[in-house]
Length: 323
Ligand SMILES: NC(=O)c1ccc[n+]([C@@H]2O[C@H](COP(=O)([O-])OP(=O)(O)OC[C@H]3O[C@@H](n4cnc5c(N)ncnc54)[C@H](OP(=O)(O)O)[C@@H]3O)[C@@H](O)[C@H]2O)c1
Image 1 (cartoon, helix red, strand yellow):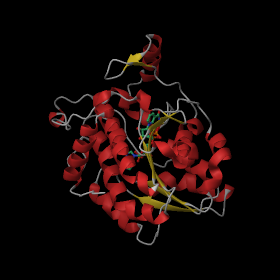
Image 2 (cartoon, rainbow, N blue to C red; image 1 turned 180 degrees about the vertical axis):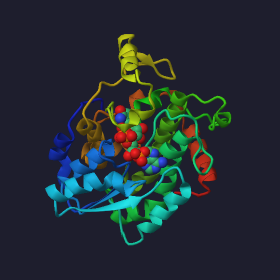
Image 3 (cartoon, rainbow, N blue to C red; image 1 turned 120 degrees about the horizontal axis):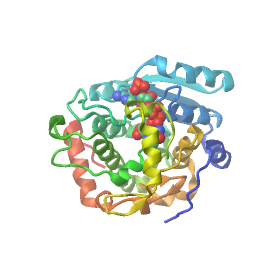
Image 4 (cartoon, rainbow, N blue to C red; image 1 turned 90 degrees about the vertical axis):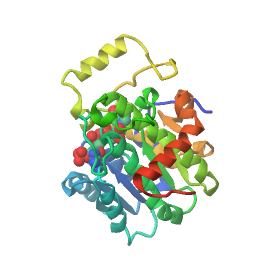
């Protein structure tokens, strides 16, 4: 397993591997002016893709990014895809809206929420599990024919977080007793553990087809994500850092990632999409542009949990996903 972690700007990764993106069709979720996905879209446009499909739950969210791409790279086509990930019917509708798109070379699922007050998605799931993970499970399932149509070296890249290291699937109470036992951090950790475990199993299943599958820890970037954090959150993070290493679910110490720019936050997503040197590690968890499976804990590494999560996800999304 490689352990050459490096915080890099997106521009640096693109300079090395960006040629592979020319002429490609890329779908990105979570695009807005100040999000990591918005930055990713801007960065990728420099590599001359054919089409960037920019997904959000309101067109106004992507308009600023579209304008910037249009003026810097007029030959790069962009298209808004309306999709609310807190509603599985809306995910299905969004996929229907892509009927005319023959193939998708790269699906990059970045959208997410962190630490919201307890609420449930339209389908009745705790919102972080529903938005951050279950909607992605369904989206990947429904778009896989288009990703397969793109051929080898296409990719599915799923955003995760270092909080996966403190997260596990609460299989017998993933909805936190209808909110009664809800802890926003525990639920965020659960949704990220689920993202990483899903990618592990998907990567294994798609390896023979040479479809790249990776989960990504982007580090720490100040974005809209912190909107549900208490006003003193940044001070609190500083205090945690001063107090020393955190511990994961196995008791293994780890450090809170340093704050970086959004270009640095988006870089590891690009690594997942196109860095040829990690192709043999399909399904892996990436951090700082490198395969970082050594950072994962026992619950996430347990293949029995991957299988249980897959079955649960099929049952919750009412979508059989056999591969
Ligand atoms: N920033 C960090 O330090 C950090 C660290 C680790 C992991 N991450 C992960 O990175 C991802 C992106 O976060 P970010 O930092 O770019 O935060 P952000 O600026 O809040 O972006 C998140 C995006 O997801 C969208 N989104 C939220 N709920 C949605 C829904 N129901 N349907 C469709 N879109 C929805 C948001 O749109 P609206 O504006 O409409 O809500 C927003 O555009 C998240 O998945 C997060 O878990 C971020």
